[in-house]
Every structure is written in structure tokens, then in C-alpha cells.
Length: 196
Image (tube, rainbow, N blue to C red; front, side, top):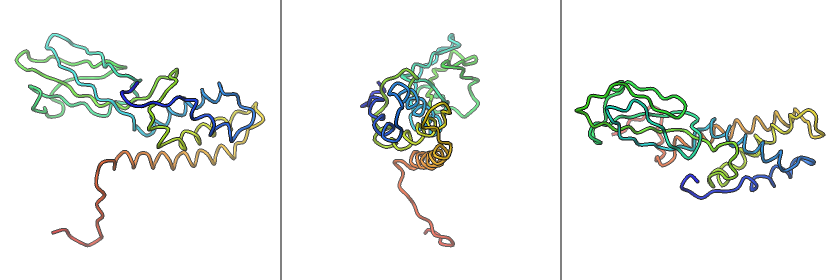
């Protein structure tokens, strides 16, 4: 799955079950997977790139991914696999998991590179290991906030849910910042100082 190491959803459960007495593991697993999907939608940290060779006679292409597409991050078209075409050169749209393209002149050999933000399907039993290793706290607090809001249960606690939601928002901001700055050197600039 994903071409990388994975962790089972069950690995998240001890952290959740240690906070709430009486929740069963099936319910905790379901809410944990929902939280993982929501976290990935909120942060867009799990991505896949799909590359396609475009044929002048084919108007649509299925985007084969290992996961569900949550958002299209970028679409780039190339002529002869080297020259990137300017934006709006190719008429296209993406609907569900299909790329639809307008008329392509037969004299051009075009390819497309599509970057997608993705998330596992709801019935997955495993997720990429980095989600557990780097973001288990975010998943835990979001899951707890959802469970604390279940009114028909003895652990119902709207104040605790609110506290967990606040923590989750901070962790989402941290994940977005980490995603943006990953693999980029940090450059500090002082006010009123010029580089030479």
C-alpha cells in the first residue's frame, strides 16, 4: 500500500482507549480512520503524482491512484515530454477520478503530470507509517474530540471535546507548515537588512 511502510489502525487505539473508559475498539477504530481521513484532507500531506501520455483521439483518462483523491494540487502539461506548456494551453477538467481533455492536435506528443492530495479509503486497515510516527497526536486529539461529543455515552464531555479541537487546530497548522518547509532550508531575514 502506498509504496511505503504502513501501520495498522490498531496501533492508534491504545492512545485513544487510555483516555476514555467504556469505548469499544470497533467504534474507536471507525472514529480513528475518520480522523485520519479528515487530517489528510485538512493538511494535504499525503500526495501522489500521476503521469499520463495523452493521445489525440482519447478524450478521458482514468487517474489510477492507491487512494481516494481529496484534491487536485496541480496539473502540468508537457510537449514531447520535455517542454512544459504555459497554463491554460490545454483545455481540461478533472471530475471524480477522471481527467477530461479538449482537442489535442495530432502533431503534438503531450503528457500530463497531475499532483493529487489523497487519503486512504474508509475501509482501509492500514495507513502510511509516517502518519503514525509524525502525527499520532493530531489523530488522537481529533478522535477524542469526536468521541467526547457522543451524547448518549458516559464519556460525553463537550468541554474536553473543545480542548481537543483546539489542540487539533494547532497540530494542523504545524503539519501545514512542516509540509511547506520540508526539504527547504530555513532562511532568516532581518528587518531593514539587505543581502549583498
